[in-house]
Amino acid sequence: MATWVLLRGLTRESRHWGAFPETLRRQIPDATVVALDLPGNGQLFQLPSPRTVEEMSLDGRRQLLYQ
Image 1 (cartoon, rainbow, N blue to C red):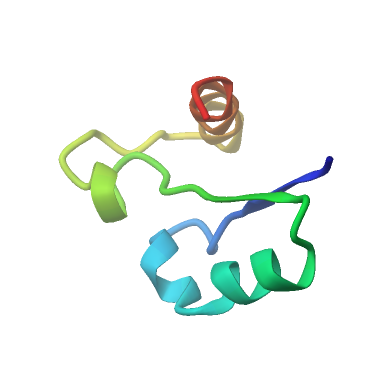
Image 2 (image 1 turned 90 degrees about the horizontal axis):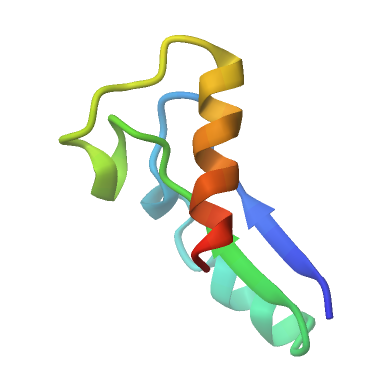
């Protein structure tokens, strides 16, 4: 089973993917599809935004550990 991680740019939220995550799930039924929001965006809008790409990467990895 594969995991697909969707990131919508550095200042966009996962909602901008629209129906695409569900379409991908239907096309690859055994895959896990995860659309992440980075801190400061989307569902995580109240958290401070990471200052570096390295911090963004670390946060994304942390989120994936709990999926």
